[in-house]
Length: 385
Image 1 (tube, one colour):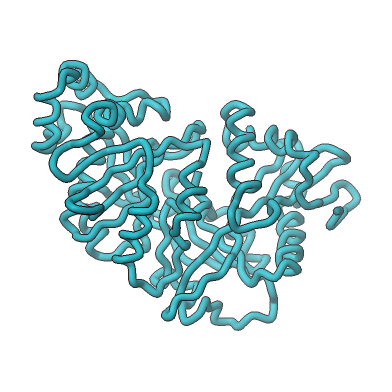
Image 2: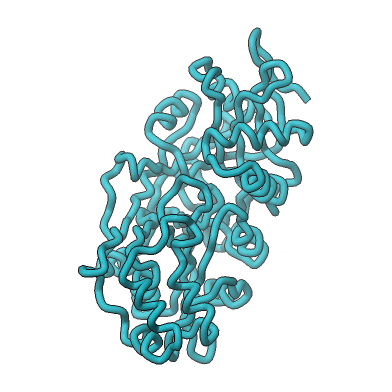
């Protein structure tokens, strides 16, 4: 169905017959081969568990797709007692180079907001705005929630790398692959996404990934146990994405990313940490996208092991909504903030009301949306790669 038209362009909603052109246009943003892009788009939009249809708006020049502005489904929880609500998140904005600076970004957003309002949504969120785009979007009602505050652990050479933790050293001494592993310790991991997890995979492939009495690494998640742990520990009214089994099952199937998992167990799971490396040519080396631990000590050990097993890699996460204890754990491990607005740290959380008659406080339940202290945003949230 055609939604809006100008003398030169028309804006329409997603149609399956244009899927191949959508895949082609994503090359400008992500690179990679067409098969990977197609699988990624299918996962992110078509198989999204919260939407019945993809929320993708296409700028057309005749029958040619020359622009995209898209939104991914996201289910949020907030308040006490807890409430849930599906609100779309802004995802991809892509314009073919020869059609840029023609007002298409604004036209697609105007069309999208009208359509999303008719679908019954009250807000649209973004966890990937950059200052230049946000300044433009503010003319159309967007407001900043706040910078997401990137933290980075800068990978170092072998000579200055801290010695492995005792249980890692013990594993290397006992393993028949100790020589091969030692050689890997002496040189940086491959720059390719798969190579970023070489050392974790070496450990995964022997002794079930056990690093000692409590720590293990794995290539597959333990979703039920992870969800159970988080439900036991998290009692927070802040705005956060729902993290139940349905969500983890979908989110961790992202075909454009490699994931690895660190677990801390005694008689049951007491902590986990999820690492992600995108298969596209953009994005940080390794992202710490989510974690949960029953104590500060367990969380600290998981982070230290992640640093050891991603030897020489840059590690990355967001910090703006961390607790003081979490931030202290990351800083003690060597993570440092990147300057706000720098090339490596442009990310800003933002929101826009879909309906003009909304209360000016912009609240979800009893949580004011435009105060980042009322939010708990993680890289696991679906805007990320």
